[in-house]
Length: 452
Ligand code: PLP
Picture 1 (tube, rainbow, N blue to C red):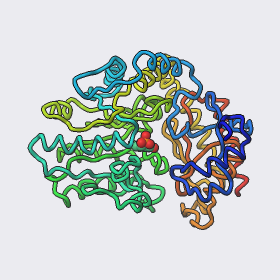
Picture 2: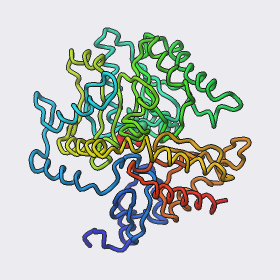
Picture 3: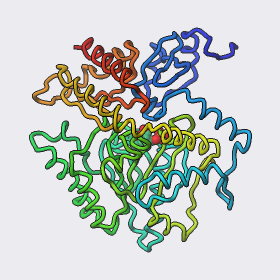
Picture 4: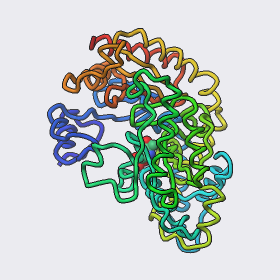
């Protein structure tokens, strides 16, 4: 058997991949026909594939490589930590320096009284933690019947049983008989697709008020929490109309319902502040983080928990945790990632310079005949594509136009963008420069033109 290295011919790597590797969120039978693109290395915002092509990664991997690829400092820290203490748990009356230092740093960066960190391996299992945490919180407060968590259709909260259940992706619920009991949904605040002729703010308010109606329907005494992404990411970069989050928070406060904000995408500078909650003026009781926490260099996630919730949990044994909760290598790498984000002023530069520049360029795509809406918050953006701008009508599902643009045209033009339904989305590394933004926009426009 050949040793598998970057030097094998692409076709050979693809054949072995097709024979043995099951790809997430992929129809493997279809992928087998054309072969997966083999990525061999990366630097900054640029991927290199096995054919030597340089590909502009406008998705930062999966919305995660915030500091860009190829930062040696993270590799050095990981190697150092592996030599010093490659693993130890924090379960049974022990702790270690990387877990302590990262928890302190997260408490410093997170807004309000989010001062406590429960570690996970990624966003999905951090949300699993949240399900158990809010239910345990209410049980400890003498209200064990408060079990229901309200979420939103088209939300993405991960791929574990709990994460999928909290998410509002019907296609995911259909595989595996989900959601689990005790999860309810309200509609998403997607004015473009569902708002018709209503004023966007009135529509946003109406969608937020569905929360109150849902709480009354279930009975406030049975509701534990509401969960939402500040900006729905994997659902298509859906930005709620102004006023939406204020109304959601008013309702949560009125019924004493915990607010879980899933910042797995919006955390660590993506929206131009450290957290999307700061950009959108949200005050969560629990925040889910992952992805940008380590810029994707190692798997790590966490629930950042308020004094209010942590104080109650501290009174009991919370029978929950993962072998790799607070993994020392992951914590050390995340800490170094946060140091780079902070000391290099990357979040400030996004807010003050590159995000406004990207916004100007992004909105310039609105003149394309296929583009019905351009949306952007910080460094996450979407285009809604339509064959008829006046009606904001989506493309017929069978034409596959949007998939064709992102999968075929962008791919051929060495630009990684994604599509969700009729929306094309980007979430580039936060270190993208103005010149690279120009290249991104040129390639996106070219891809759109080739499909028109
Ligand atoms: N929550 C949100 C908002 C996400 O976007 C994601 C992943 O895209 C997750 C949770 C799941 O995170 P992970 O894939 O690290 O489990």
